[in-house]
Structures are given as C-alpha cells and as structure tokens.
Length: 570
Image (tube, rainbow, N blue to C red; front, side, top):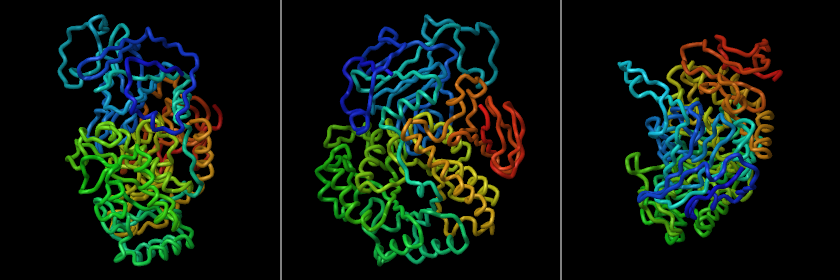
C-alpha cells in the first residue's frame, strides 16, 4: 500500500474523521511517474493507463451494475438512484481490479471516474466498417488494441491523496482497505438473529401483541424495531416518546427485555423545534433546515456530544441498544427535500461534502450515544472508511435483482447491506425474499407499512418458522465471520471474484455470493421459478441442505430451498 499526493488536497476528507484510520506504507509497483495530474477551473484531474482487459469493481453500494470498465461512475449521494450512473446512498471512492491492485481516493467530493476512455494515442481493435443496427451495438464499449486511460475528476479540489493497494486477490486488497479504516465492525451474537420492525403507527399494546405472537408461535425473533410513531413528531424528529401511543415507555421496554427482546428505535438526524436539544444544537447546525428541522454538524464534537448525550441519558439508559438512522442519504436529486449542495456548515464543510460524510458521522455519533453498548444497527447512508461501524444499509426500493446486486457488490467497499423483506405479493415471493435475507449480514423484516404481520395473509407461519430457524442455526458461524472481519478485514459477504480473482468465469457473476467462510449462495430472483443456473468455482462442494456432492462448473439446479453450497475442498 502506498499513498500518492498530487497538488494540494483538501483537509476535510473521510480520513480526517475516521478515528481508526491506520495507514502503513509498504512496497508498491506503482510509482508517481505512472500518473498524470492537472488542475482545471472546475477541480483536479488524475489519469493513468490501464490494460483493456481490466475488470473494475466497487464504488460503494451499486445496485445496477457489476464490472464498471468502460463506464462513467459518479460517486454521488442519492437516496434512490434511478439508473446505472454510480449514484448511491452509499457511494465510496474506492475500487478494485482483477490486476492485483485497487485505489482509494480520499475525497468527500462527488468525484467522477471514467473507467477506461480512449485518447488519440489509443488504437482501436475493431476497425471494421460494419453498420451497427441496434442501440446496444451503437453504444457498446469499444475495445482498444492498447492500454486505455483511467480518468478521475475531483470537483473543487486542487489536489488529491490516492492510496494504491496491492494484493494476491481482490479479497486481500479489500481487507487491507478495511484495516486501514480501523478493521471490520464488532457485533454481538444476538444482533445476528432476526430483527422485526413493527408497523409505524403501532402503539404499545400493538407492539406487545407482536412480541407475544412471536413467542407463542415459536417464530424466531431477537429484536423488535419501533418505527416513526414512537416520536411526538417524526419529520423532523423530537426524540421524545409519544405519550398517547406509549404512555409508559420504560414499562414497555422492561417488558420486552423480560421477554428476551432487544429494542431498536427509528429516527433521523433532522431536529424538530420542539426537541429538547434544538436550542443547544442551533449554533452547531447548517444554514438550511430539512422538514423544518436543524441539520447538526456531526463533524463537530460539540454537536455529537449534545445529540449523543441526549440519547444516552434518555434512551439507551432505559435499555435501547439499537437505532435505525434514516434519511441521511438525501440528495437534492430526489425532490429537493434535503439540504442543498451549497449548504454551509459551521465546521466549513459544504453540502456536497456533508452528503458524502453524513452517514459515517451519524454512525459515529450514535455509537457515542450507545455508550459502548454492543449493537448492530441500521443506517440509510455510509461512505468511505466505514467498515468499523456496526451499521447495516437498507433501502426503500424493493427490486429483488437490484437487492441481490447490492449484496454481491457490498463486499468490495467496506459496507454492509441487507436485502430486507418488507412484504410479498404472493406467498412464494415472501418466502423467497425471506430465504435471501436469511443468508445476509442482517436478517431484517421491515413491516413498517404493513397493517399486520406479512405472512398472516398467506397462512404460512410454519414455512416462515422453517426459514428463520435456518438463520438461528447460522448465527454462530456468522459471528465467526464478523470476528474475522474485525481482525483481518475480510468481509462476511463477498462476490465470487473476490476469492477467485484468477477465475475469468467469475468476472460477470453478480447473482451469486460467498457467505461466511465457505458457503456459496445463489438466490432466486424469478419468484415463479424453482430452477436457475449455478456456477461453482474450483473445488469440491456439497448442497447445504441435502449434502449432495458437486464438482466445480456450470449446471442447472432445481430446488424449493434457496441454492446454497458449502465448499468442502479447495
């Protein structure tokens, strides 16, 4: 790993706010002469050559693509990115390649990465005069006979720090990046069980009804989540219990704890004027509001202390040990509900930078508010150097293919992602979604908008219990994977290409992933089918459910279970 400094980098960058940041220089095949750097009126440009057969992965939570070679990727915060532009509610300016190296750009700007562009000196391999008759042919990435140019543009800045990380495979490279950020996150075993989020309008009696239903019917459930209705005002937030719905919140919390539950509260960081911390936060907040609430500058220790101190004194002290930190992924590309990019914060950050840093700074604040309580919470945004925060990303989207692509891509960038279950149009869809979330980092059923428990309408509690019991059995193994994540940086979920970088067959597989140490998971995305194509990399494998043996290669597989294979020999 080696750091290269070009020009005069900005000071307000992700590494400046990463408490565990740990850079140790080692030998590197790259040298400064491999790069070309210049500044323009708009910002900085860094360029270097890459081979035309380079595969490029990463850039955070990407839901629509896998290999980014030949594409423009903008690492821009966007609550619900509509298409394959690089926009994401977890953008990360870090990528890896199949060539034994990756790069981290230490910036909070909306950087643009052109992952293989041609310049006049680049030759074309395709010189035919064949007329293209489809849009796919017209706009396809052109192959070059020679190396092409990787071009990175960083707006506003007059310089950039770039960290080049080399390794034996992509998992090795990603692990080094994660360790540079302080290592993977530490999570308690109970947090790896089943999390059920109740309807957002439920009162204390209805919450208890759900809790009792789970226990009486033997449905595995470890954590109950309360949605916006627990606040006196939720958009923006007061962080004060609504006494009409929850007249005795401590009594409710104590009862749930006695029943063996942990409790997770929904919130966001936009502070309503009625909140007890509004006036104290006013000097440490942005010059724009969101939903009439303050936007605290969590880069300032004073703002973190006020916000975290209130949570510690009034919420975590009563037994709350998890939070769902929502709406920190906002951009002014999604209806303009959030703060503009030109917002000014007391620390000197602008809105663009704060959009990129918001998730990590919010997580940092909530860890302080949890007062060292073990947790695995949820958050709507995360950025660079976020591996050490025990917060899992989720989304309001529901496209199962995008969800699976997100699972596969998450391991490239030091982030965690759950393909949460919100509902199902049919019983089979609900079960298929539950199967995928069972084999993910967090088993989250988010019924915030469901008037009743989602499976009641299908009368399929036995099938649900069967799926969730698998999750319960997986918890010890997943805990070991998280322990390894913390100690070595190896993520618990990985694309096949991460461990099998030399296997060209894995370069385009974005619908299978490695789970924990030696499992391969291949979820169904066609809810009406029980058959799909499987690729098993080199080694010997067995069916997770039946024990049937399989050799490496491609084959068609049929099952009512989610296809899972355990590697028995590599």
